[in-house]
Image (cartoon, rainbow, N blue to C red; front, side):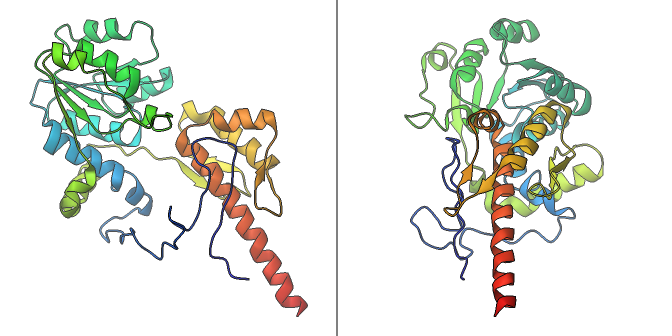
Length: 311
């Protein structure tokens, strides 16, 4: 038996197939991969703070946003991999940093653990008023990771002229029309400058960015946020999960304990579990998918071993 593709079809809408092939059905064969920088001491950092998220934060702040000492920068998705790093770097540059997050636990973490000057709940019905209360003249810079209605609201509060740095639109990636449809009225009225960037535009400078952030981590000036998952498909034990993800941790354990793989390699889950898994964050859904894939591969290898012994 030759294992070339592993597909797991789930009922979640954000992904249909997890595969070792690309979108054209061709085997990846290492295309698009790059070697881990040998100077990275902790390998998990290579896919986090010293990987794509960290590089987007580093170059997004230093090369695109360029906050000046005393300026106020507001960051959406502030408790995420990019936002949390971007905020800490902006603080090192002397900016006043306000983060937007979705729970009281995340807000507390941003303010008490990462040193943000202030954090607000973007779900508040009075979020515009709260932003203006925190900075009456409006934020100087908006570092946007989410797009959508949150960003439309934020842009109305900004001072003019201000700068909007568009790093991502995660709240709209799954929209039917595919992306953030911007109402430019607040951009026009507040005389804002909207600038987008892609982190990989700075790929040739990644080694310098990695070295700088690694130095800041060693000096205790930046704290990386990580979620570590250990043998999730079998031990069902997750460590280093922030407190606000405890409910999702239990949901993943339930999902994996009830999941079975049929002959079509499809994860079958009940309606109640379907509700549970669709309530998870994207990173947690991906972790659950990896657990299912791991379980399926172990089953296949076990069958191959038994077949070999039988011969």
